Image 1 (spheres, one colour):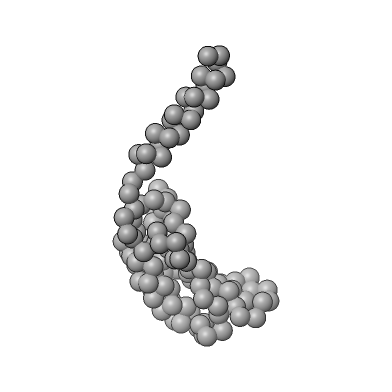
Image 2: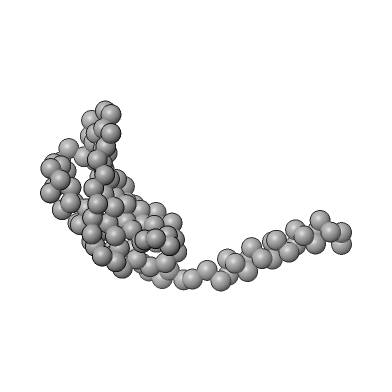
Length: 118
């Protein structure tokens, strides 16, 4: 076996070992194929998708948004060293500049931060 073959075998073996060691996500709703959530990290969030959306909706309404003018939000969960957060993105029914906004919901504190469209 030459060096290239040995290197490829080592890389493939390490890749398969890494896949086998991935944690089981169980039946968490965010892992369901029809869910709108895209989980970037394979950890388990504290909030459910529905709870994160409810918190985001409250922040949006408090911020003066009428959610009837926006499409169904796109939802994703992200884990970093700095925070675990849900990101809920709203696009306006009428496509035009600035007719969108996002809400970041911190998974542990449940605090929401509104980001207005520009």
